[in-house]
Image (cartoon, rainbow, N blue to C red):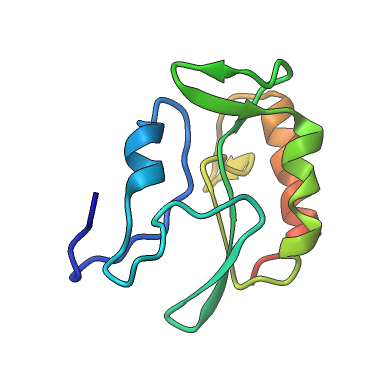
Length: 119
C-alpha cells in the first residue's frame, strides 16, 4: 500500500491494529511507515524513537497483534536514550490530572521514560 506524498507516516502499532496493512504501508520515498522497535527516525529535525505494541505477561499474539513481555519492552529503552520524542502505543501513568488504570504496563512505561528521558 502506498500513502499520499502529502502525509508521510511514521507509525508505532498498538492493540487491534491491522498488522498486514501496517507492515505493507510505504511512504512515497519507499520507507516503511511502521517503525521497528528501537528504531530512531529523524522527523522534522527531531530524533524520534519507537517502541511498538502493548505489554502482556503472556507475550502472545492477540487479535493478530503481537504483545511483548515487560522485559522485552524495556530492552528497547537504552538504545533510545536521549531522543527528542518517544513514540509508543503505551501511555505514561499520569495524563494531566487524571490517572488511568493501574497495572504492570504503566510501571514499565515509567521505567522506559526514566531510561529514555525524551526531550
